[in-house]
Length: 223
Length: 175
Image 1 (cartoon, one colour):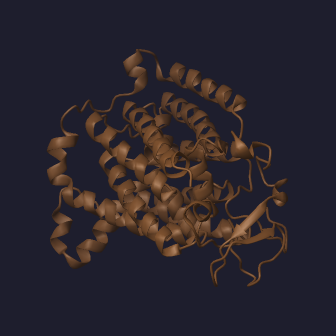
Image 2: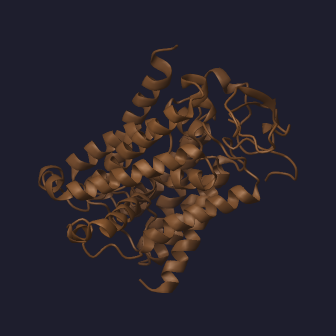
């Protein structure tokens, strides 16, 4: 891969990481509350990204300008891997990309997710020769797209899928349940109000502060 | 963005969800136009392999790693994500965080407990990601955007098990 492409990769990665940071997606609380189906903003980020991405990628492909990498459908391994991933995701509270970003934001627990992740991925690499014949080779259907299965053109499927996602996102609330009215949503403007319960750098304690009040040690850590 | 002298909650967004979603979708489109989709988890395995091969050189001959341990597209993406996240956090003066608030409410403020669980969660998650061939970025965002059957299967399974696990941890046995 030439140096220019690699530099593009670095730039896209930087924009991706900055967006994950600014959007709050690299936050344990937002991720776990999304999985508890209480705070739906993360799901709305993903659905909006999919609506834009599906349309963009598919149109690019129709124009012959896309470098697609359709992941092969080895259903056993994908489903079992997905099950493990879902459990680990809820336990860790970050996904692989967001744990990198959260670690960069100096969220200490994300460093441990990162370390565990390195070890887990490395373990899979070591086991790969024995896992492959059992979980990857059987029930393997190659690079199948859903549009092929349905027998429609990818462009039409992408348009229908994107519109569907945007309609769902439009009507999905930001929050469900208890805190729905207590905490404001979307964006940064109205968030000065909520309560912080912090664990400070120096010691642990249930500090409760109003946003905007600097912490005792200056660098206080909030939740 | 954070105003001067103001401290903001590092667990809350600074930009609205629709803006974040739109930017991620456009970045994916740009990435696919230039070289390849966005993915994060493969690099964990390659970095792990690189580290291990320093101590056990024959690891580089493992079919999973053979000929793939050089710097590639995803190496740059992950490196970039770290730098971009650090830069954004620095520019917006995002405070650091030891233990997430939600965790403290539920499991207490003992940080060793949280770090141990974070480590174990990370291990299971990345093992699963490599078995499935992708993560939230590679499968859920990039893969579904390419309408890959594999990624739809992945998205549905992680959503189901993720929701069940989170509910089991936080909502089923109320303390």
